[in-house]
Image (tube, rainbow over all chains, first blue to last red; front, side):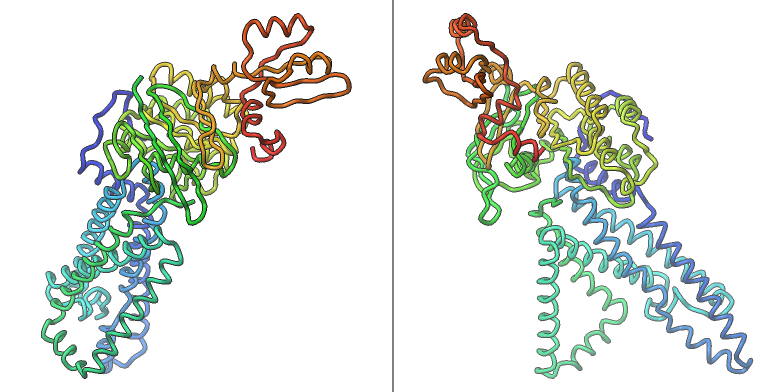
Length: 254
Length: 296
């Protein structure tokens, strides 16, 4: 419990209001911070067990070959999708709640964005440290790889950027989807995904029709891993800004 | 008198339904208002419009002299407690009481602690697992302890028992006396809050049908009881809101009696009795008492 007394404080400033919303999101830190790390830890333990089991059952001369396969792990990917779910859930329940506290939609959205950027920074830093640890310990002594897999980049700063960009992507898409949900409920999401599907199919058809798949491949090859992830920032920005305009006219229901 | 809220020609349509229909009224500073009406009359919609949670179809709203929509300087001075308030799933009551002070600069923690004890709110229990009454108590506590200059209570006490409701009325009145503020209370339990209210707004099918000082309203009608012939004779061509008769006895609810008329009635052997606010509103909204009680 806080120890605020009866003395009136001045009303919060614009920045103060935004930070209050961010605090509101983490007043119960379990869902967004505690549980994901716990799941990640459990997955790591599970992986360690599996790697140890496999290595115990192959002949000495095959070990190097087998552990090469450990490099294709996607076991840390859940955390990105999980963060999208966190974004959707956080907005759908705290939006009507925060408006009851007299928060404007603008302050709510900005405060939520600050929260997600903070979470993205925390998780990408944590994962980068884990990747460094993984490398330093020669894959936890088992030549395993969960955080330092090749598609997260090579150098630590590449990884940090890729993790951060990926988190921003999933958070902002989650924010946009949640805003659509808050404003138009299920009908809005259905329409949104149909629209998205048409767009993706249409894009694919256009590329096929103009025989440009090679050009697309070359584009990403030229951009490189880091460059390709940098392009995701464009989509993230569009989703985040779009979500803002959707939420701006949303009303809390039920 | 300073107006805290000024509404002119306010209309809100949802598709083909007109929830608020050309409403015009003002709410003056440091008074307790009752916003009364039946289910679906438009009470909640009006409050949502006044707090910027919903958008008007037409008409103007000024709260503290400005539009409340997306206006932080207005909304920081407003607390809106509604019966249907949802809380985040993983919230316990203590999380509400920890975070509420961040948003209400007049929050009084000692008062909140006292109310938590009064209403016996289990602060460590998940809100999801609380009874309806306990959830309502959380809202009531936030609404009172936030001491917002403009406080809306929309059916705040669903599921609260009679003792808890009385605590709410008592604390509200006591705290209001010490820290004057504007309160708008919507409820079905008109008689229970009747002594609390200083001004009454009655809404029916989206229209404001009564906008009157509570005292004036209470004195605006009288029950006249006696033998059927005496009542009939006295009533004559006066406007009668309601009449009942059993055998040779009759009761009529008559509007606006002067002192002279009251004396006449008494000398004619009739009994005069005040009309309760609830009865009066039922009579004035032309709904049967039964219908109103069912909706309560």
